[in-house]
Length: 487
Ligand code: UDP
Image: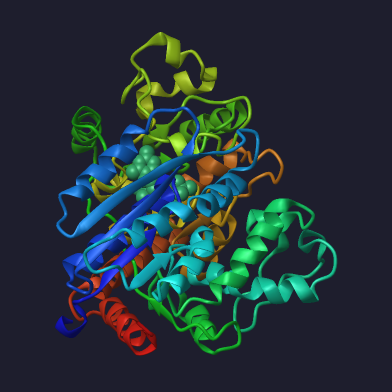
């Protein structure tokens, strides 16, 4: 890689842990493998009058000691509080562009020659053109989702009416068809402003010189072939995953960490289910109630990462996730505990509750963990695969329905729950049965899922090792860039 080691790359990341984490992992991977010599990491922020979430600060700080990685916090942008999260992100990413332009133009040392960004960052491609930089897309959901994104401008022309009113599944050349309800949320309402923002981003995705995907061949061979067939777009794609954090490098305070790990140390092998619905999701009372009843029915011990409930479930806290609550780790004070439904208190002796932010990778890596009840964010799925843990999927929105479908039906490492489409609630009986199934040593299907996820753990490890398939894909992507680089 020495011939390429003169690159200085800039990364433009969307705010929110689900974006910052994979972008930082890419940055660290590129510098530690000597694929680029320097990374400038631009991080926009939303002005919502909240202090920076603790977990975000810690994850950024832990990356600061990494040589050759500069993190630049861009000035906060004011956005209306009452609009959809996706729209907030789209606005912030657009309005922060002048700051990026200013930073790059005032850089004295060699300026970056590569600009790396994601779907929401595509408006920054104009800056890449202005400064004659190569355009590298980083897609940290799965290949199936990328296929949908690259095909969306075509769907926009050929599908009449709402996608969700279609009787048939949505067809994408060479890929598994998609159930309309499972489509990414902005596609659910074509009259909404978000749909138009999203459509434009999808079109821009076709302008990257190359796109890296955080997946690997064994997970999605068919879709990777479809993406390479040229039928969806001409952009060369490279499956370079699974890039995930190291288990030891957790953005979690020690008190929280020790509390969970000490408890897990005392449990039997593969006897505990880890529960988390993502970095920023706030559950409704109804969801917490069913989940608590489901955990009780399963009879399994649990570790549950949760935030106090809201009357309305949703991603309202996404950008402030990991904020220290007064309970910081354990529900200590009655004030914060009282907010939960009764069913939640009833099961306290069956497991452990971690308020707000758990050291997820360390938990998944622990030998006492036998299953993961997850909202199926792609980072969480990759982390579970890398730790060899089967999944019960409770998808909520964004790309999670497709991730859950892929996880259960194609990769075969878990069960997708039937989630009520409007309330996003799952019946407790189904939760209990599904947890039981993926963890039960006697269940034939459960055994097959566990065996498969452990095989994949092994393959994932090999993929990322020096000269492994994903490492080689990464090197090839940068080689391709150097051929297309006009700078
Ligand atoms: N995470 C964590 N502790 C928590 C909740 C989440 O460390 O209590 C991390 C998790 O390991 C993953 C990320 O937050 O890396 C969540 O990303 P994902 O794509 O799964 O879902 P999102 O939060 O973006 O919906």
